[in-house]
Amino acid sequence: MRSGSFWSLVLVKTRANLRAEVSRYYLNYLWWGGEPVLTMLVFYVVFGIFLNRGTEHFVAFLLVGLTAWNWFAKSVLHAASSIMNGRGLMHQVDIPKIFFPVEVLMQDLTKTLFSFSLLVVFLLAYPTPVTATWAALPVLFFVQLLLVAAVAVWCAALVPFVPDLRIVLDTLMVLAFFGSGVFYRIDEVVLPDHRFIMYLNPMAGLIRGYREALIWNQWPDWQYLFWVLAASLFLLWSGILFIRRIDRVYPRICQ
Image (tube, rainbow, N blue to C red):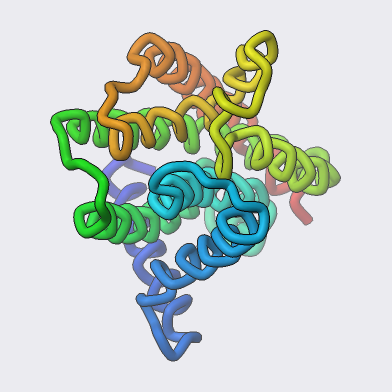
């Protein structure tokens, strides 16, 4: 399949899936922003009120963390089963199997852009300073995009061979969630000797970077972002190559 035809099919399928998804709800596209807001309210009540996590600008702090985390977690979990879920189509049409995770990633990216737009509007209205460090937002977004794509492609590539990995992945996501500092500051809660281990989780560093740029008027750690970028590019390239090389194996194992 030519590159132009491939991306045209991805865009058509993504648009159709998004329309079908929103047609099931009364609020339609508003749920793309409403769902993360409701999640944020739950965590705010638990950690901001009941447990009294008195972090400055806690609402903005929590919303930034949840917006970034939800993009990562949902995209990876959705993409993990994408090749398995596409077995009906792959048995009818000779289509590159990389199509399935890419289509899921595009669908979630569209909703994420909506969520990040709402986040920016909220922060503009919230009493946090709008400074030059906001210019780092596109860089942070791009690095996370590559990270999400890299992890998602590898999960999609491996789950058809070992379907039980989907269960393991759910557990790892819970562990990564609590280790990413979504509702607490790692540098305040974790002992100094253990922080290096925490930041081996790239989402922990990215969430910190978003908060530094958007809330705390600080530039993110560019060296850290460079290493996340380099690792993500390598994993994404190798994952795509892996799927392409065993492209014809998937129809035999996805029954």
